[in-house]
Each structure stands twice: as C-alpha cells, then as structure tokens.
Image (cartoon, rainbow, N blue to C red):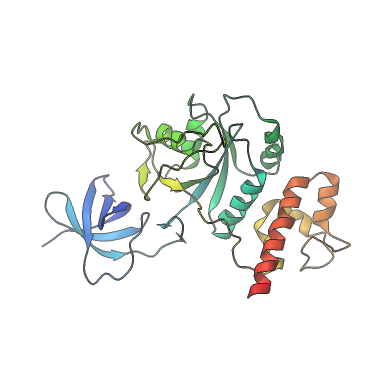
Length: 291
C-alpha cells in the first residue's frame, strides 16, 4: 500500500512541487487531478510516496495565513531590512511595511544592515523603533555580524524579507543559509537602488531550523482596506497613548484631546512616525471614499 506523509512545500516551479518531509528529505511531487486548491510555497501538505523521491500531492492542510504578493502561505515573520547607508533607510517605507505586517498578523523584525558602513544622517530617525519596543537587530551581511541573532529570531519559523532594493536582502539570505549560489543584488551607482534578482518563491532551510523565502515580503505597498478609525490599531507604539484620547473612535488628527498627539508633543512618539501615520491615514480615507 502506498505510504502517505506530510511535508512542507519549499518550492513550486513549472508545475512541480518540491516537498520536504519531517526528516528533511525533499520529494518532487505533482498534484492529484482532484486537488482543486492552488498549492503555494509554505503550504503544509499530505502526499503519497512514489519511487525515486517522487510523490503525489493529495491535500493542502489549513493555512494560518496567505500573502498574495508574493504568493506564499503560513508566514510567521517578516524581516524588514533597511541599511545604514547605500541606500539610506526610508522610514516612510518602514512604517508602510510595519502596517502591512501587523495587518496580516505577521510578526515583524527590523534589520538595520550594512553596519560596517558609516551611519547615514538619514538613518537617525530609525533610532526611535528599538526605543519604542519593536524587534530590532543591527547587522552586517558582509562581515557576518548579527547573523546569529537573526537566525535565533526566525528559528523554527517561516520568514520572508521586505525592504528597499540594495539593502542587502539577498546577501543576508546567502549568509543565513550558507548557500553561496544565491544571486545578490548590486546597487546602481546612478540611482542608488538595487536590481531585482528573484523570480519565484523558494523557501531555503536554515541550519538551525526554520526557513526563509528568497522573495521580497511585500511587493504591493497599497494600504489595506479598513476604516480610518482602525488604522492606529496596527500601531503598537500608539496603544498606551490611545487610552488618554477623549473619544474611543479618535483618529488622532484633528481632535482636541488626543493622547497620541500629546505623546508626539512630549517626544514619546517620533514626529516622523506620526507624520507618516497621517499620510497613511489620508490614503485610507481616500480608499474609503472610493468604496
């Protein structure tokens, strides 16, 4: 009788699905004709063993979550990679990515890469985030500094990376996995941004456990659909200050008695973080008007 197993889809390519079982063996599988669910990297699946490490996908187990771009399932963590310099960190992009992570119920960890470079003046604004309690790791993919800390954070988890091109995501992936064949991005001297190198979603196993995808964590940066009163729910650093707001549905913009605005005035919340919130709030309100 054919043996049935469970495994993790680590790559799908040209109609084939590469499934790693609990012993770390990878099987090349094709889906059974009756399987209607689209299979994604990150899916936990049941499959039937055939000869020569081949298999047949029988069923996709329930997903914890699913990202549309990239198409990947069961993501536990997103590593938001910025750089000390080249390119300088973009806190507007950082705040947008944090919003998307919390909206999708994925734990974010901010990585400030290229610590071997002098810190850009534009990087000063990023100091707020570790002070506000966000997961934050300083690292250098070039020297290897901080890689152990990152590996510990994503141990036994499925992680994706996000951040600007050229911040060192591919170099970091190569260092974390020990796979020197992973293509790295080069930074254009003319525009200061990297060139994309990834084409499909593949999960790379980490030596200490867990897996990390070789594709950016979010390629669509539009604000998710929500009511304007909901936006601050995805700002954990606003939470304790919201309790001082006069109104429960305070949007922290024009209200006279607002704990968040008071915290900004007192320096407890970064002014740039709040200004970026107002920009995203306007985008949310614009979407609401289009409903």
